[in-house]
Image (cartoon, rainbow, N blue to C red; front, side, top):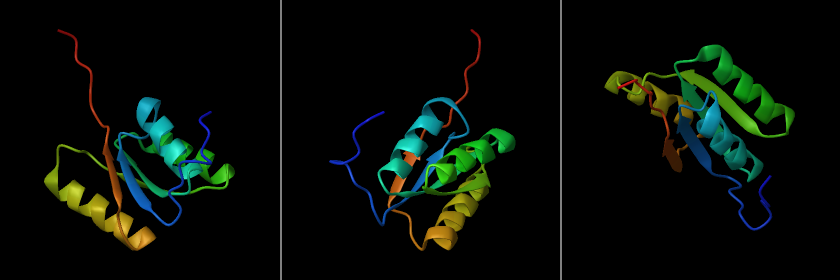
Length: 102
């Protein structure tokens, strides 16, 4: 686990796309450990809600929004959800992606 004493984000609000698992979940958890409120977005609802639960169990603040990053209206809804939940949006981590076999 990273030392978060020198890296504080208290009072900041973040949106992390693709944060249900993997790198996105790790980034969301690190932001929350550093004091940011985090909106977890992903198409994987159960896994996204699990990430939120881990953050909250560790004392952080997080919410979940189902979000397909290929949809502009869903981007608008995700940003609106962050502002509604946290009053603002300071940080965006656009992590979502898919892997396809070649």
